[in-house]
Image (cartoon, rainbow, N blue to C red; front, side, top):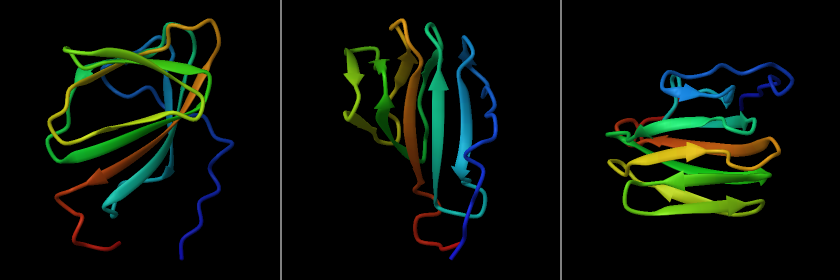
Length: 117
C-alpha cells in the first residue's frame, strides 16, 4: 500500500499547455504503470493538440466543463462525463466556459502495464 497526501499542493503547467492550466500528480507515474492527476484549468486554459505513443488517458470532468478536439471531432464534456484516448489518439483541450474546470486524468503506460511498482 502507498498513500499520497498531496491534494493541497499546487500543480505545474506541463509543456505545451497554456492559460494557467495546472496538473497535480496525485499518484505519480514514476515507477508505476499508471498515474492519477488532477488538472485544473481556468477559463481559456488547456493543452495543445498532441498524442501519446504508449499511453491511454481517461479524462473525467469532476467540476465545470472541458472541450476536447481530436482534429476530426470537437465536443464538450460536463460534470460526470468522461472520454478515453487510446495510444496515438490526438487530443486538444480547452476550457471555453466562464468557470474553472477540474478533471481527473488517469494515465496508463502500456509499455509498463505488465510491471508493478
